[in-house]
Length: 257
Image 1: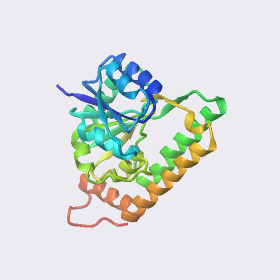
Image 2 (image 1 turned 135 degrees about the vertical axis):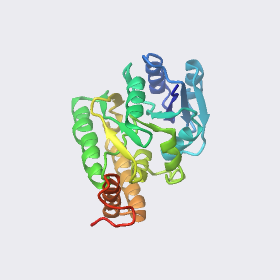
Image 3 (image 1 turned 135 degrees about the horizontal axis):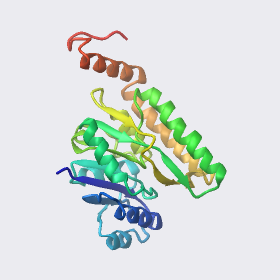
């Protein structure tokens, strides 16, 4: 039988983490393992994990990229699902992630959007229609495939095994989902399912400083990844892989730019 681990990085988010873990306990298909990466929390995160009976991995060095990578490394499941501490998945989320990943094969990840809660109507609208929609469409055009949304995605452990040496886990100011998306190899793919939704907090839009920090991190992540592989080179490699998979271009013959 296929096993599935849910990985949740968390730093000083005990109340939201408790709600996330409670939602996982209500799943129609319970995860085989929940790994909370406690990224140096000083609140009640340890107690919340103990009360929920989940595995807690303490990582003192701050950074979402390192926390996510450490969680994926430690997880034992055949499939790896990812939530944020403020994610609230519906009761069928684990079952759907498992079903989609099995159907798509080991080299395809799946991701979906978030439905914002909290804040006010304007901040929720901005989050839904500008932040997430812009991320999916604009970043997707640069990548050549949909990007992973950190609050809601899954992949096989075998896919992660190929990507883990490539991610920038030691850099604090890097968006883990954006960096991981950029490391997706030409023979891999990402399925964006708009019906695979989870609740996510609208708190990033409560003030300008929080949103500014996220935008700066996005810029730094792009700058880092673009220097190693430009979007043009990346899209060309993915086009070549598609043509080879379809038998249009032999393995030793380059595709046209």
